[in-house]
Image 1 (cartoon, rainbow, N blue to C red):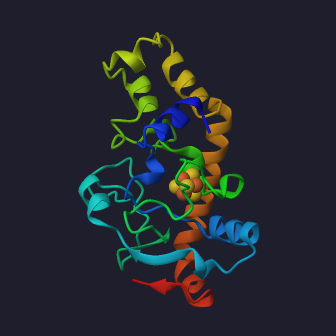
Image 2 (cartoon, rainbow, N blue to C red):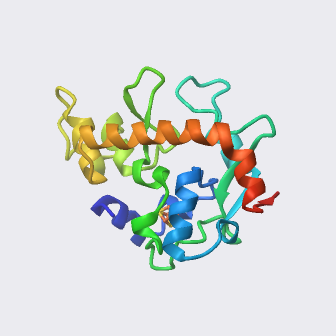
Length: 199
Ligand code: SF4
């Protein structure tokens, strides 16, 4: 976990606590099941987006070209189960992830995405994230004065905050695109085969 993420987790502001659906690719689900030696159905549900996701257009592309529409025609998404407050079920009280080495792809790349053109972009919803502030030049002095933006150095530094280089994030995001394609083709069969709860 990067220093920035650790700082957020100490202040109980980390994104794992946010009530967003934690999108799970089929490979994510299999990897976590192997890691925990359990069934996929014990930690996933196939459910609709919650109000917060709808409001912020997370995972929905209908009016924003750089969001990926991960929901199928039924509007549902494979996602991790949540605690009562909407935070991730694997999120410990001390802010740590109980499945860190096997965590979701989206947890490894957040808050970065690929645009439709293949550029690395940030998730524009995460305007409070110190890393996004660093990329965008948000004038929060605590975050931005650490960074001089010339020749893309701001993005490079922001990537370093989550332990990635531009090359590495491109590789992981490429993997994400492949897994999204696999997801689109096979999600319904996967839900049936693994007896995943539909909500
Ligand atoms: S899997 Fe881990 S990193 Fe991802 S949201 Fe849950 S607690 Fe956070």
